[in-house]
Length: 402
Image (cartoon, rainbow, N blue to C red; front, side, top):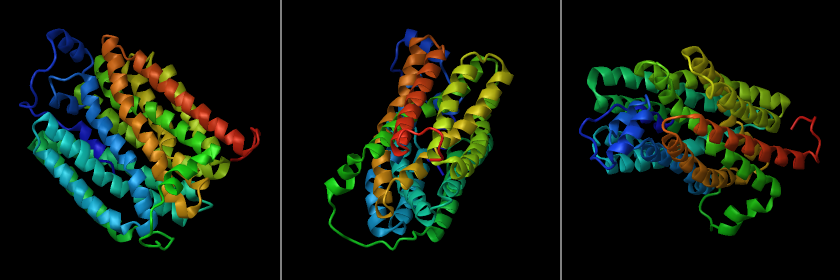
């Protein structure tokens, strides 16, 4: 369940005031995405708009550094219940927002804080219940977020066309409220929380990085996250430039999320059979390869659809299997804290990825090849660092299940 699906929200015609020159406006129009979110902010560049959704992604993962230790001490309930309330409040405030700063506060900050308090404990709780089939379990859990992305986009679009932006956002809010209540009731940890105890900053946040393997994994995951969300954000606008209707381009996100369900479930099954590192590295490399091989030369509807589906599958692996990797190399009583530490580092790359890509697109006069190359380079670099971590664990052996 990710509130970032609200990035497909429809326009408020009264939103914003001009803040760019006519020349910049022409450049901006060349890079206008099919995602209706960008139509909400008609006087801002693609890069400027990307800061809102990037802020969401950043905060959801950054706050894991605080949410993780709270989970380890008190368990999931203390986080899930207030987190749900904060998340829904942010969504409802987004539905009545009209100015840029209001969207930043409601969608960018409030919704993100609540989402972090809901998402991170669910991942940690599931990890605590599984050992042998942990990757499969987490793959199924993460597939739920992709399925939610499909359903939310469809519901939002249909309600928005009939009742307007505000009710479309509120409809999403009510959907998330319903499923979050189920989470509050059902999610538990296998480990009994120890309760209140002194917090040792060095032990909690610095000690894990004494492990070279953990440090390499953290760096590798952060590099992957620097690039993996760029195609997800920009492929709709690329499709519009190649004769997709705005509606069809809008649904490319849903198609990609649907393909990601397959990738996330398959990732868990493959990881438990062939090794979590092997599966993750292969998925990341394949995501980078199809971005260069299919996105850059794609100019017709069929190639763009093909890339959208393949990238959805491989990116599903890239955003799923890192969680069981961190769980695998972490003591079970430190799992939440270590996942939070990785998320904290990961958050900064998540924050910068889309705005940098948007700036590259604007600099290249609406051409997307530079953003594609940047995304693929970051993913390939991250996969290579993860390969170094794997080789350290296996003492340099390549052909081993790990």
